[in-house]
Image (tube, one colour):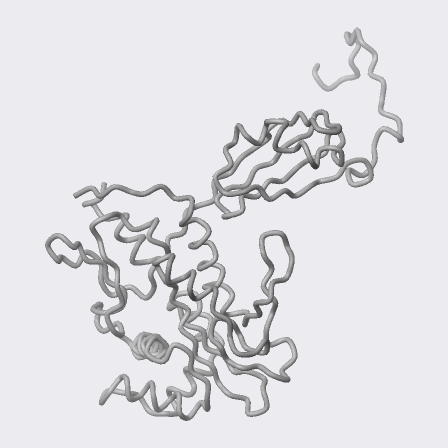
Length: 162
Length: 157
């Protein structure tokens, strides 16, 4: 495996471990290097890797992981795990849960107070905005959860082949 | 002599006048309707479904039908509509693909899980056959890929 693949895999693992990370890039580099262990590349190499736009796109498309730098006051970095639930009941519970404030993203619960356009309102199937507001990156797994719950009620029970 | 000015045309072609053509939007509407999950295609064609809303439709309007659980999409042409009745024709119907991320895509008797960071083709998303614990897929970076490989594998053909 080349260094990029190792870094991608461990960034995904760190995201899965922490679910939603918000903090400085230095700390994030430390976490990823710790996850790789002794064979970890230099911090500058990891920094270069994380800052590349292609990395962030690859992570989002292939590794179920969102990585971006927010535009809040501290310019913090976000690493969010976009893996979805498979159990409709769990997904239903997550959808019903509301963050403590409407400034928070409903999926990753990160507070975006005072940041313009960080969150986009969710539109339901009728095209009306709901009370849910999400990061652009977080809206895909949220919609998948919505579909999962909506279809669970209508899907016929599947008999086992065993 | 197919392209020469035709002398054998018996019927004279009357060209359309300007007023015959207009923007589709100026004559007819395209409606969007959300129907509850589980509505059948036959039900769409029945007048009863549209009985409350049909007085807003006109002939040759189109209705784009969305199923509430996003499982399908259909296009209807209104032939005739009035208060309490509506004749429609089903133009086309598309079943939207089932979600691979859900349990819908996973055949029974298999388990899919995340097993740490990918390392030399190990770890990542793995698919295990529950009956004997054989790993059929391993080292995939996301769930969809793991499922797609499982569904492609020869044991499920």
